[in-house]
Amino acid sequence: MNADRSTTQPRILVSGGGIGGNAVALQLLRAGIRATVVERATAPRPGGQSVDLRGASGEVAERMGLMPGIRERQMDERGLIYLDDQGGEILRMDMAAFDGKGAVAEIEITRGDLNQVLLDQLAAAGGADYRYGEWITAIEQDADGVDVTFTSGATERFDLVIGADGLHSATRRLVFGPEADFSTYLGGYMSFFTMPTPAGLEPNWFSMHSLVGAVNIGLRPDFDPATCKAIITIRTDADPSLRRNVEAQQQLIREKLAGGGWEAGTIVAAMAEADDFYFDEVARIDMPSWSKGRVVLLGDSGYCGSPLTGQGTAMALTGGYLLAGEIAAHTGDLAQALVRYEELLRPFIEKSHELPPGGLKAMTPKSRLGIKAGHAVTRLMTSKLFRPLMIKMMSSTEDYALPDYSPHTV
Image (cartoon, rainbow, N blue to C red; front, side):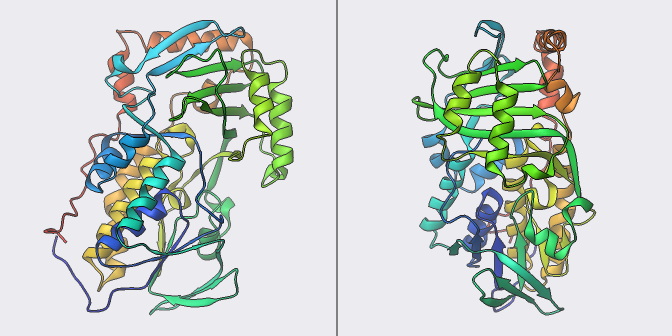
């Protein structure tokens, strides 16, 4: 790829300090472009669900030099165990039997820890203009730039705005239109938080339990053996009143987990003390284009596939890498950079959006009979006979040809 550089580096604003936002800011900085990053939270957000790196995202992590930091924080997770009401084992899915290409990958790390690896690399590279507790309230653009108003009241002009502010992106709403135009509710809600590891939990294994009433709970090992990550999945009708209402969210969880068996009561008790409680709808974002003028979307803002795909981090990290690479290669023609970003990334996103068979309904049966049937299907799909098919399903994006943004190509 031939570089098309201007004598003056563009002023770029990144809205959102998550995986995608920090990835694109880091790669831009390494290309000599120091971006401004605004993040609504007042500090880096800890915890979060466990995410895996495989295929393109694993290659991106290698190319970006993230692997040493990831290895230091990598979790020792060896597979999945499905448990009954009393905590007895129903079936076990060993990661080793799937060559690290099953539901649990070879490299697993919490979202918060991966974000800290990116922040550490940003600091080592000289740092971005980072502003916590700040976010965009208005955007006006013309052919030459974008005027942005922040919640602090400040107004600044940029050459490009990158919206990496999540599923409920304010950037997307301000520039592209209402969330409802692009969001599809997939039938439920998920919650994640850190809690003390229960005494009876088998170390290094992701333990899962299905409750009657279309609820699934799980406990994943953490980097620190003293803690684990609670995961709660509830299939139910959409309820707009739950948005940003932590009290109502936790009340729903208490009601759904009441009398649930295994560690349901322990999880509910720990929930009230968690300082990283997260709750949101399971939804997918589909957009005909990720850019409009001088505003472009990255990660969940533009192409959230929902936690059901297991590809959220892969899409954000890979998207950030490609977007920065194209901007660095076309600093004198940002419009072309955005076209190239979408052309190159769209095939990867389309594959990453594929939901597991049955979606949330298969994951959260309503009846005890349905739960038993689900376990039977899982046992069959993880058998030696069907294992190659399972690996193929979990590796659908691994044939993606990742563009090379080595110095000699840009």
